[in-house]
Image (tube, rainbow, N blue to C red):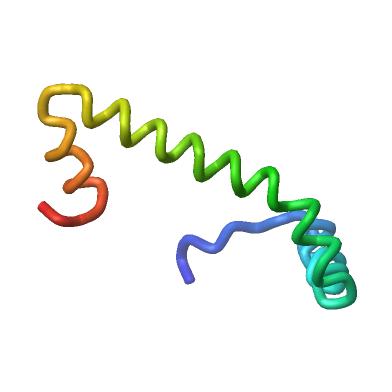
Length: 68
């Protein structure tokens, strides 16, 4: 494992706390995360739409998706 990143121990503790919260509050965590995830999807769609407007945009999209 050459490229292992050393993280502060509090990082793993935060992950454990979040996992516990998700398990114990399945509906509540979705409400908290949904706006963020929705915005990420919207931004990704805009990125691809704008890229398609450029010459060679489709080729770039194919390359990004590993469809050379």
